[in-house]
Amino acid sequence: MPVTVRPASVFADIATMVGPKNPDSNVCWCLSYRIPNKLNRDLRRQERGAYVKQLCESGIPLGVLAYDGDNVVGWAAVAPRADTAFASNRKIPHVDDLDVWSVWCIRVRPGHRKQGISHSLLAGAVDFARENGAPAIEGYPVDNRGEKVDLTMAYVGTRKLFEDAGFEWAADTTSVLNRFPRVLMRRDLM
Image (cartoon, rainbow, N blue to C red):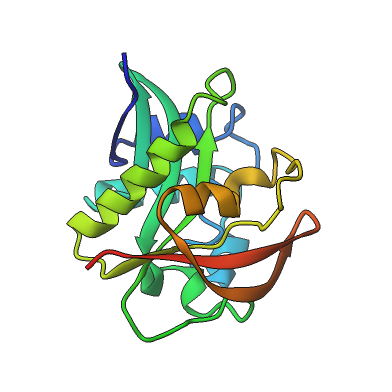
């Protein structure tokens, strides 16, 4: 059965991809770029999951999820850049004043990697942004030039993944992740 990608609006499904196994763990919940820095620092442990649940209940999908049948196998965070920390990030430039969307986290469940799911997730993020009126979508992957990226840092994607999805280089950044420079990749949607 092929993987399907749908808007992420069910808290339990999102939690399978970004929540901790131990509810008292202090993990990201994919909030680090979604919310203001002060709030991100202040939310701890179970408060982070509660905040994501509250966002889900607002009715605004938080990204897209990949499903293999009924099983969640992947996640991509995508939202208007103006609603994220990228709106004021000094290391990631703005190339113009368009109300672009950002995709910043792509995760695939262990046991489902190397099956093209990250490509499906990125395509789903593009479709989601387009369906919601985005004039363009940006990502900020590492430019690893084919070198292996540590799995804990691979969530931003690679330049090749974005190029394969029709994104083009738009700018260099001053952000570095796992020794690799990050680049601003962009795809026009209009």
